[in-house]
Image (cartoon, rainbow, N blue to C red; front, side, top):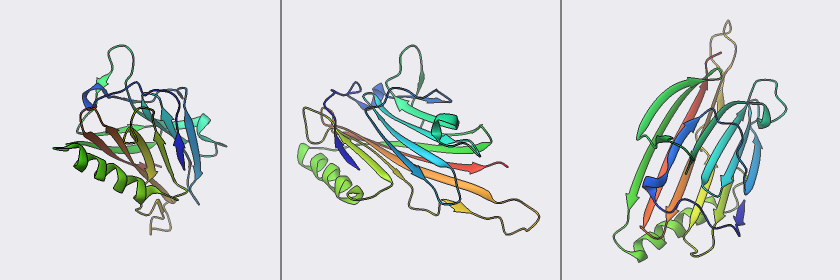
Length: 189
């Protein structure tokens, strides 16, 4: 889903991003809810200050009953900076996160990279892309990972284990930076 947002974005460069796990749902400019067949409901949330992903608890009707939340955004106070890599456990999930920032040498290379991203995500029902005012390359995008999202443990004595993943992209025309994140959750139950 592609949406044009009328609100100026609050984050304007990669080093303004911070990271938090376990936050309650923040006010979103756009939301895409995806029910993974045989798995949890996932809510991809586009914020004026970047993104938030909520994953529903087992048996919950939607991500508002989230067992897990990831927020990458300009957060108030003294939040944690965006890590390059981290692992954690939250809400019955084992979590793995990586973030990379690529800075392009010129506007043309940056523009091509953003256009290529928009083409790759165009028409995907499991992707949310927002463009912000001021530049066609001021973009935040979230998409469920292309890897298999749910798998069953081959051992019949063990209940099925769920796996969910997503990727995000945050493009900053002022600095020609693109921050790319990759997240994966594996059920600990």
